[in-house]
Length: 155
Image 1 (cartoon, rainbow, N blue to C red):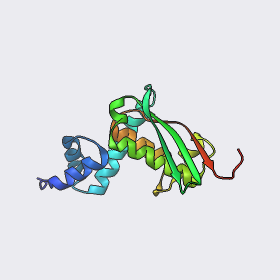
Image 2: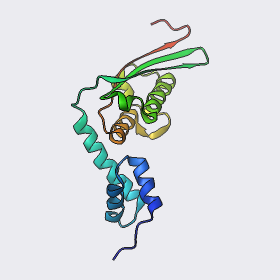
Image 3: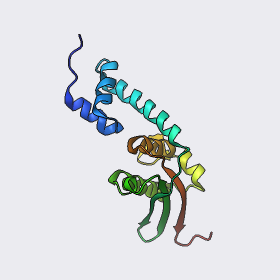
Image 4: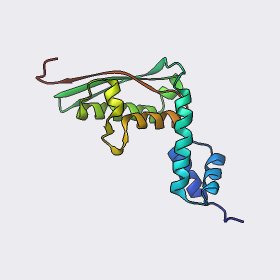
């Protein structure tokens, strides 16, 4: 019989993946208590569910903005399925992080944006970050459009 999984590990896995306590405990037990292995498996499952959500309509969301030193400005529209999710701190943080990324990396369009390495964690692409938010928040999330202006640039 395997030793009991510490509740701290279950809570930690739950906070990183957004799954329920029972699912987090089961993942840790299936991984033999190996936290990293459990996290990897939960992320794979979450991303699979996120891909299935990709067909659902997104009519809620928010428009975010970021201005860097009065010289570079970004406006971005990120959509989700409900106002409830759009008002969460996690969704707002995602929009802020995407704005910062666009400011620093200057992608041409949404397609290029999603393929770029994420500035806050270069082990992930921006697309992976959006999919992880999708999995964590349980809704389809779409970067609809953005605009980046830099002082002195001609468009």
